[in-house]
Length: 251
Ligand SMILES: C[S@@+](CC[C@H](N)C(=O)[O-])C[C@H]1O[C@@H](n2cnc3c(N)ncnc32)[C@H](O)[C@@H]1O
Image (cartoon, rainbow, N blue to C red; front, side):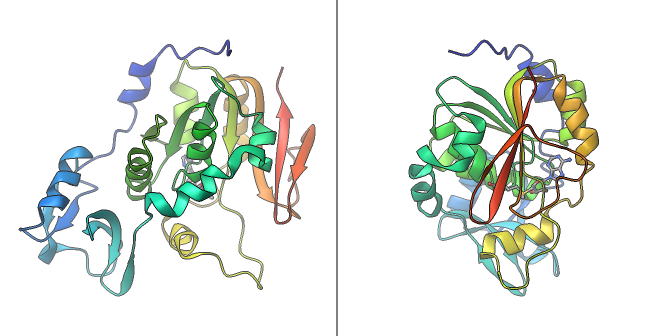
């Protein structure tokens, strides 16, 4: 049982809902499935002819919400591609570092595609996922819905959200973009596209300070295994082959 409270849902809902005019979906006029997705996710739909010439945009590929580009293959993150990852999650380093269990209230402050947050949700946690980029956030919402996941996915800046919310979380989880790439490792395609779209270099120390007053138990920061903790010295860590979870005990 958790003692954490989620009292101000309305505060959260008012913060940066996805701006449907800023995040339209581009469809062929006869794409009924695309229109259904537009309606479900409250996206304004526009004719595919007016799709951006050089940027990523939302579209529909083989019935799935997709990120599309005029000169790149589309990206579909299907439910199947993440379900097995999530099914294996019980004993992962992420689960251990967050002490994931039923009813634990978790804020995934740097949500990305939502895979870590959805994993924690599958382990029984009550998860709110924040993502500042509305294209990425919409994809995460879609994935959550496809997985039948109860996690709440909010398009918001973590710093502002933590400043404004009255909620208290058992765990606040940070997974900011890692600086650069080790030369040997080419990331999977969804991570390559995340690299292009994601907000980089958030002021993590500043956000960490705001998170402290909103955290009941611990803050967990995911880093590359060999990365310097840069001023934030954890109480302990859970280290894997390539990544490390730094744990900061708050109370
Ligand atoms: C490494 S990714 C997270 C990947 C994620 N853990 C997953 O499993 O898919 C970091 C994400 O944080 C987002 N981000 C960066 N600064 C942010 C901020 N201030 N508020 C919310 N999201 C932010 C980026 O846009 C990016 O999508």
